[in-house]
Length: 123
View 1 (cartoon, helix red, strand yellow):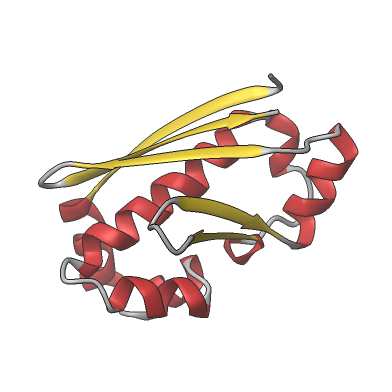
View 2 (cartoon, helix red, strand yellow):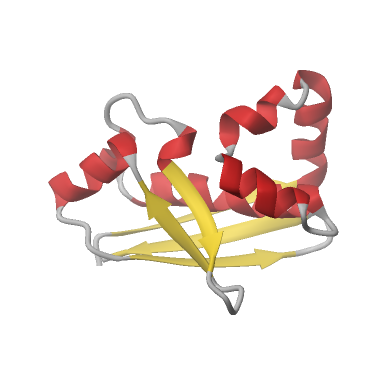
C-alpha cells in the first residue's frame, strides 16, 4: 500500500458555493463527462459532492500527487456498468502517479442525506 485518503463533502456547503460562485464553479471542478453524469442524477448536488470527495481523497492519499500544476480535470470519477465508482487519471496527476510507481487506485464512495464521503487506497 502506498497511501490512503479520505474526504467528506457536505451537499449544502457545495450548493452554497455554487450559489455564490455560479455554475462556472462546477465547470472548474468537474470534467464534461462528470458534469453530464451528475446532472443526470435525481440528486445532482449529492453526485457532485461524491465526485469532489473522491478527487480530494485521492490527492490526500499521497503528498506527491499534488506536485506541479495539478488541475481538477486531471482526475475524473466515472462508474462502470454496475455503478461501481472508479478514477481515471490524466495530466499532471497521472505523471505524478507514474513517478511514484502507483499502479492501482481503489475508490469507495458513501452518501448520507447531506454529505458524501470517499475513501481511496493507493497500491
